[in-house]
Length: 93
Image (cartoon, rainbow, N blue to C red; front, side, top):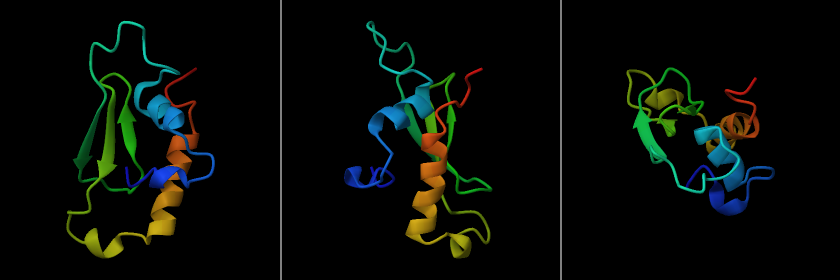
């Protein structure tokens, strides 16, 4: 996983990414009815999104007009991912 960067991102763990994608702290004993997945899609922002209803992580694909030249440098892009993944209150009340 490029965004996980081999465990070198301080404070970012696979558990945080898992919770961001599924909304769960751990895998259910009987597994998921809908398996977690990753989709690459065009987005207005380079922040990753997720759908906890479908257990899908949406990663930005810089293919839209003008988006390729606005792709932030890796440190800035990783920072955006860090913001998303450490906010594990996503979808919770």
